[in-house]
Length: 261
Figure 1 (cartoon, rainbow, N blue to C red):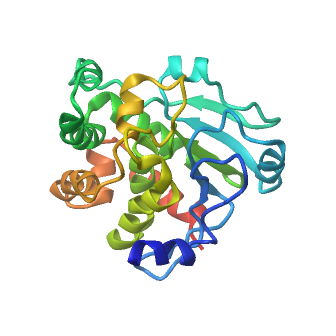
Figure 2 (cartoon, rainbow, N blue to C red):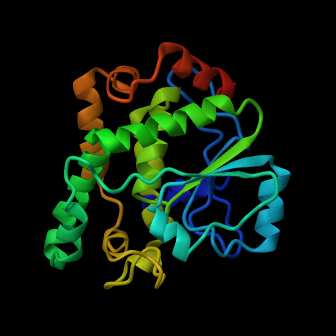
Figure 3 (cartoon, rainbow, N blue to C red):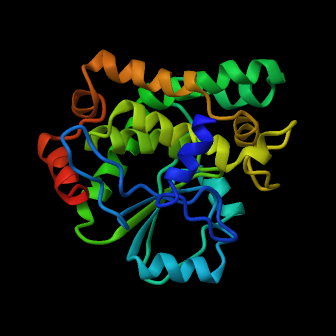
């Protein structure tokens, strides 16, 4: 019941327009130091290939000028993002993992019971893999380079890869862990009907088999905890960003300057 009530409280975040998948404005969340994430600057989403014209017009109206596609290049080819005028496209795939190059093959061949454990491992790898670290660093650098516009980042369901990027941004901006956890887990309410049986959260024929398998797993507390455990070993999000992602103090400060009020 608590999670369902969070949906009600989050109507200012969820953009429930026909044709969208888990599209949310991250603006409005409060930070530990009493500031607030600016609205109409940061959007998270699932697939935007079939974004209706009314939603396209809405996104352009709020100033969208960057589309960060977290999917692999072949997924982006078979299901390309909608092209919007004045919006720069960046493919920043968080898969594959350099340190675990056969992970995707393992996941594709896994049983339903094995997929839960592997899904949790994927979060651990997204937080620790050196190739993924380069993509996460680039996400933050692109945000810092965008002084006034809005950025949308997405994968297929807006749950796993998008969830990890949202954790990173919220962590660096100072959103309390409890609130970041709610923002992550609320995907299960938004996509509730899609987690029944073997139906994937982004049940689309062009999705990779691993992605479809990942999306058949609801967001889970242990997935969120896997990322948080890695971050805490560094001493927090700031140290994680500087030591693992090689971001500078000034880049983190600029992120806060641009996206908080």
